[in-house]
Structure formats: structure tokens, C-alpha cells
Image (cartoon, rainbow, N blue to C red; front, side, top):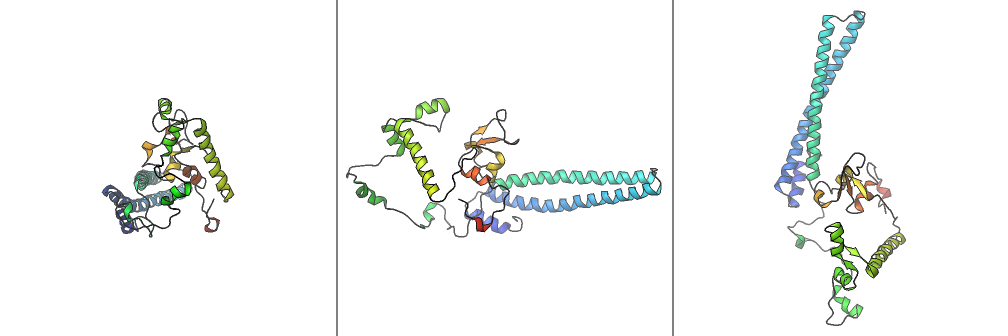
Length: 270
């Protein structure tokens, strides 16, 4: 657990150049977990007392042949108090669990041991590379004065890229494709789906709307909530939870296996 491996977790966070806030969150989680253990014992002790008092009440009721004596009333009050104490502790435990879950959701994943240490991508290690960008001009027969364009510039020159119309009807981050560019997008999608299927991958058409917990499970939430498209509760919810449009296929594909224990022999799932 994090509490038992706090030093390791903090070391990983520092290696990720995490903020002081993240490091303090890890420390708070460890502290709250220790409090949680103490509260669980306190709750269980209270429940045990309640059960003992209830057993005494039952025994005395049998001996008095159902007549509720002052002694029985006193023990009933003790049982009720013990039950109330347990309920109060349960409320504290629920609050701690909520706080811990919130803090955990704010922490990044731990690093793999093979990840090199560094402040930026200049410290990355090149594992493998494919192709040679400098060989492209000769391979494709480009003239010496040819300069490749970005894909959106190519689409605009072909007359099939319209961002203004899309922004006008849908807002920022949308674009409208028409004619050959729209067909090209469809063709590329079909090509890669067919190519992946030929390589043994299973094509999946998952839901495009997922719940808050689904996005928390893949770590999009809470960090990227402002970047997601949220559906208002009056329109739709996911089993009572907030609903969002998926940001990538990663989210529904991963959540297809939520709650499952996958055998190593079944991996990778493609």
C-alpha cells in the first residue's frame, strides 16, 4: 500500500518532477490511512460492545419471561449508545475514504524502473527508430525546392477543409471536411481498421459516452475534466453518474474489462 511504501512513492514523484502539492498529497494519504486503521478498530470495538449488550438483553429477557426490568432498560441504552458510537465512527471513515480517493486521483502513475531520469525529453533514450526522414526526397522523387506541408495546409489547398464553418456551428476544436478530403479521412480509417484486423486485432465499436468513474479508472479525471465534453445531467447520466463523450478509444476499451482479473497467459488482448 502507499502507506507502507511512502518513501518509494515520494521518490517516484520526485523523479517525475511532481509538484510539492502532489508530494504532500501522498503524505496526507499515508496519514489518513493510519487514522483509518485506528477508526476501524474503534468502530469494531463499539459494534462488539453493542452485540455483547444485546446478548445480555436477550438472556435477561428470557429470565424475566419477557418483562422489561430497569436493568434491561439500562443495558438497552448502553447497546444503543454503542451502536451510535459505531455509526459516528462509520461517518468519519466514509469521509476519510472520500478524501483518500480524491487525493489518490490527483497523483500520477508511478514510473517503471527502466524510465531514465531527466528534466525534459532531452534525457529520453532512443530505443528504436524506423525509416529515414532525410531519404524521403529521393524515395518520392521530390525536387530540391519542394517543401512538405502540414496536413491541414494540404486539405485547405484541396478545398476540403473548412474550420470557420465548423467553429460557427460547433465551437472551437472542430473542423468540417468535404469532397476528396472527407473521402480520404474515411479511406484512411478503413485502411487502418482493415490492416489491424489482418494483423489479428479485433475490431470494436464501443459506446461513445462513458461515466465519470470510467474516466477516473483511466486517469482522465480529475486532471483533464476541463478538456472533456460533459453531457448535462438533464440530458443523460450513466447509471446515475456524470456522463462524458469519450476523449479516445482507450477509455471504453479499458473499461470493457473493469472489475476483471486478467490472466497473464491471456495477454495481450488485441
